[in-house]
Image (cartoon, rainbow, N blue to C red; front, side, top):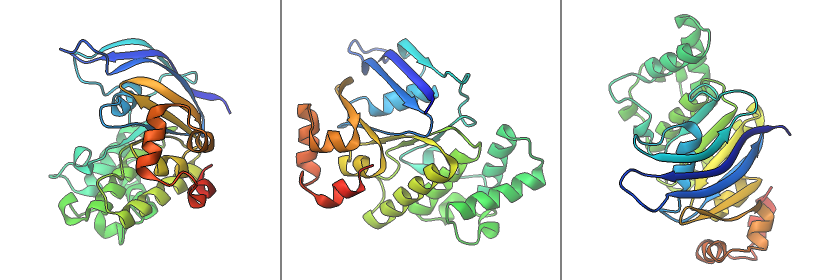
Length: 258
């Protein structure tokens, strides 16, 4: 697989802070690869994700490099982003159809009619019932799980090479979460996407991703194949995450690990 993104010695410090939120992060993400970014709250997971897409707050100081060997990556077009709270990506005063059409026309050469047809197709793909009718509805008319599915449709509307899912399932109940995970897995396989999954759930990371990066207070604690990280953790923080989440000997977890 060819490289999609190369991160070299990335350090991020927020305005007014002396201690970096991220320090000396280096890794490569291949095309079609699935990578979980794992850690506790405050470990720098979301900072890394937002640095990759270019959504760091104004005033953040960035050192190091993020390179895209295939050319500059455009947010919305080449990189799709799914937030933990779909309210961060869905406009409450615009219909779902208007939002999808706007994104589609911004990133793809579609007229309004074709964009609306594609919007309905995207809603059907993320399993929103009656997609043609859903185009005219507003975010508050959908459940939390459905709003997250719509947010995923928006994230893939530009046909990106990389999808970043930032704690995209943590606010959902267990059954709804399982459906979103299954959808992400299907989209990665069908579209050939690279996936960066930001999560604190090591079981979810092991079941969905090929590699796991563990962050601890902004630094790389561990990086390796998912099965190796789960069965032979080298960092204390990884062992803590394992102890708090799963049975280390769980055959069901290992059976799902890529």
